[in-house]
Length: 254
Length: 59
Image (cartoon, rainbow over all chains, first blue to last red; front, side, top):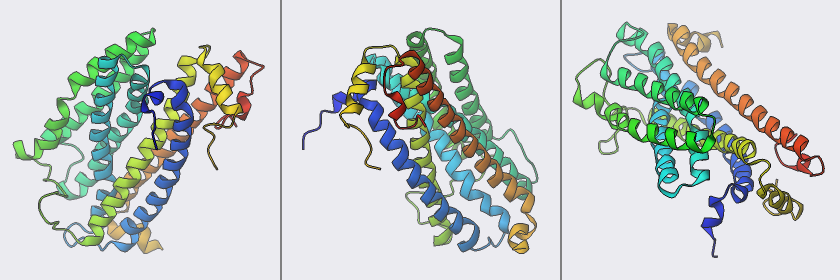
């Protein structure tokens, strides 16, 4: 089957797709979160050294990964927005920023509540913690810049530029535990070394991470729907959107 | 049940973490859905003759 993917680069064509995607990924997120929480809080055994405090890993690691991943995806959309002057790419970057900020804040918050019982402190100016705090400020900076510029197309370009400049921080976060020997421990899960944790613990983290991915996709697609309507209303495409709807095209089967 | 909630003495740390995550994600979902609903409502007010009300997310 031939699909004309370029069709989806215009907001009007993407709107129905975003609508379906938001629902499907929302359902996946709920199912995976349910299964993940069951493994995290019930199935997985208590850690021999950290007791039940270690269970924070099941929310901390997915939040921290998502904070980094979302930034990279946002940088990708920003590069596309600048390179191709594509409106929808800029809207996708705009839709991801608030969720990224929330994930970064949650990574710091859950990290603090894990650090207190295990390291004896809520906060230290450790390399990874500090670079994650900078990541949060980058997200907040992008959001503030968006609000400060009235013309959306100028805001798109300014935010894309700031996002791309800030992207240098992501590898710093990722490799910080190798480059600096500070308080934060090394990677919990490695792709090259066999896990040192129980299989159920690894499974719990992976299920929760999958749930976080689905949640992020669902909430970003729902937000981009709102952004499309807010920014494009009054434009001529609206009529074609209603045309599409009346013919039942793009309507979700549910 | 109370043993489960006690989390081996780490209840404060575990539930402050899980609680914050749950609260943040629930609030974000509610806010985003409200924003989408408001955007569609304003669109409907701008173009009263169009059947936007039938669009998904408008309810």
